[in-house]
Image (cartoon, rainbow, N blue to C red):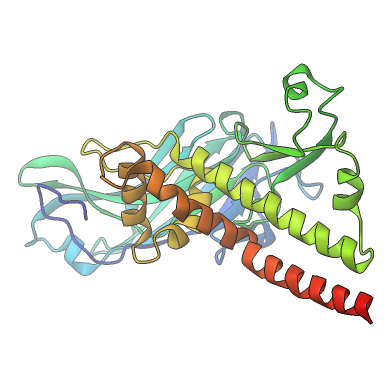
Length: 334
């Protein structure tokens, strides 16, 4: 638990994206169709789509509702302000806007956030913070909403799920950087905007096996086990990449990264540390990686392996494979 040297409030800060508009060069603002904005997924999808022209600027309409105690004149907080912060990891872009009160008590507020397409490359996170003067010190963050929205300029469908990019490449006769891995069936590359799995088409029979649809009993069994193993290695690789360069606050507390790295951690941490909240689990991983705990990074590998196997469905697939082999063996004996 993080300790602050001033009073913060624990009430819920409810906010949402009410709508969005897009503007093409030399054209008027146009409302974004509701199908591109999901309040369930909390995603605004602004990626290329044939139903709308290329846009250069976007405008998001935001609303927030503060707890009564946050704006209580007799409370410990004065000059209470609410700000929305859009952050994108790919370009390190930070865009902020302040909410304006629309109710007499100051609890209900609205804001408009302007985005420029040329500033963004990937998915951005949108969070809301409450700032006030506390004990005479201005600019104190007294609350941060648990709700996070995402603005995606890659995808046209508002979904939190991001599929892996899988490519078939020749390792032996392809790019020189791949030739040293010519004996490997696949490689996972986590340096791009989303993880990339390179499958070695020079590996005899691998491409046909992975790309096959249906097939005989043994072939299907082997393919499903192979894919489960591949997915497990992918989850392990992307987890290590996500925790490899965490940003930390002044007191050393790690923060969830933006983009797919943050999504991976939120997916896997409940399996890495099932008895801890995500924030506490992230702190434990960070301490283990930096050598701040006795258990250390080595002990954590078993937890990561377990979590990756679960995410990839390895236990279920392996169990099914064993049963299939038993049935095949019984059939041969008959």
